Length: 358
Image (cartoon, rainbow, N blue to C red):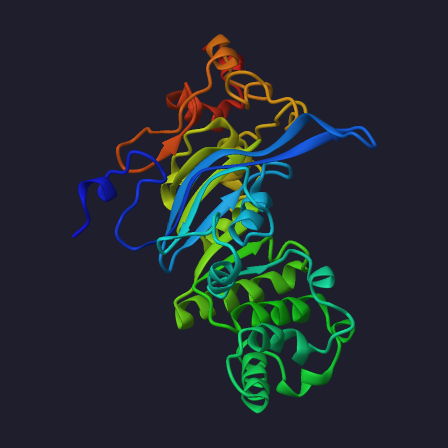
């Protein structure tokens, strides 16, 4: 039986039974250096600026937001391609951020990553068999013949002919290359996989096949995914819960159904308004929310709510006070907005200012 804290979490990072990953106040700032010989730091790119959440074992957490919001940076921190500036990342109780040497090597066997571009993530000088078997060789999971057999089995598992084991990446299509990348990621049977835009570089006709493959493997192997994407229609299909990021911060965090039925942040509403609805009657009744301006620079974060420069319902308080990420419903639907109760009106008006509400 879950505790009351798990039933009614006070933050997206409140631990509960069954959590496999906990991210607590994760910060990733990239220093800006000046000078050729004597360098000094003159600023920082605040890519991730205090993000906290948990992921339950066996679920898929969708992390969405436009380019530059910090999504991929979080994923790279979780697999320790980046060393976070501060904060903690716990995988089944082990702190990913402080692990070094043998401890880090052991943890990395449980965490793998699928990258966005299958054309860039596979070494063109290595055969498919070498690419898939490399993690098994590194972690010494068996003899050479055992690894060869396992590699052929993995190719079958991802829907490819095991006879392809001696071919090179350039001989395959984009969808096939991503299947090879997936086979490599699951070769050492990890617990947790970061999938960074795994289908965005693929043709639309191939995306559904790769997504279905990932879901099948999740059920078969008990995998947990952090699924990073900018496509709300994709995340609606794959995710159990959804976290919405903007300029290094979480704007909204909720169960998938609650977020799509009742979004509580204007940025989420704007993202949803860009997703086509196949019913023409419903499509005609809603209004597209066009955000003005570009994403602000992570070098110079706006004061107050960092979305206020583009928000259609922003008021003076939004320009001065940063809203906390808090549970607005009592059911674990978190939003960082001073006026979350007014967001629903945007679905039909596009802006509350047009109705004279503000």
